[in-house]
Image 1 (tube, rainbow, N blue to C red):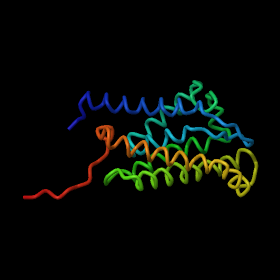
Image 2: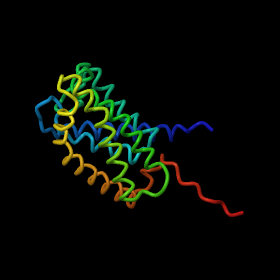
Image 3: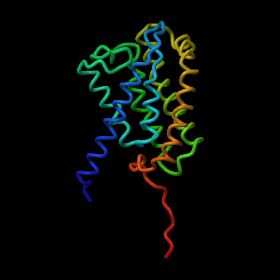
Image 4: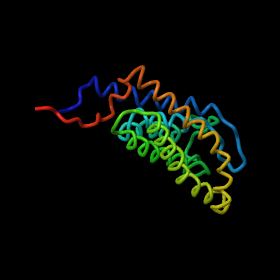
Length: 193
């Protein structure tokens, strides 16, 4: 059955809302040496993955990246243009896409619980994003991988705070407005005959 216009509109609205959230969170910036600032944008990435799931959340990230590619200053510190995709942050940007997919997959089935949201945010929103970001940052800056990884530990306290914030927001959202999670696949329940 083809999705209705209303379902498509609701999905597009969710994509736009989370893209806008990620953009707004880019206004919180702490510059660091090495070209990769501390931002709040990964909080938006975590929330998108937790709420929208593995199929819809990447669309929010892709929308932000397309806007950046055409030169709109939507990334941390008002950056945009094709240069961001060859700079030290390029791997982190690609990592956002992989990260929201992992977060969404970990949240796909089962109830929304604090431990599931925290684990998904930590694995997808931190570990996966770092796995893409650190090697590219090392390559672009010419700094060996181990020192780059060690310098990236500066991001960890803030990222753990973002994991906690995403967890609290999603658990509260699930209680207050469960329809926000309408795109999630419900766990299969046995049907009594």
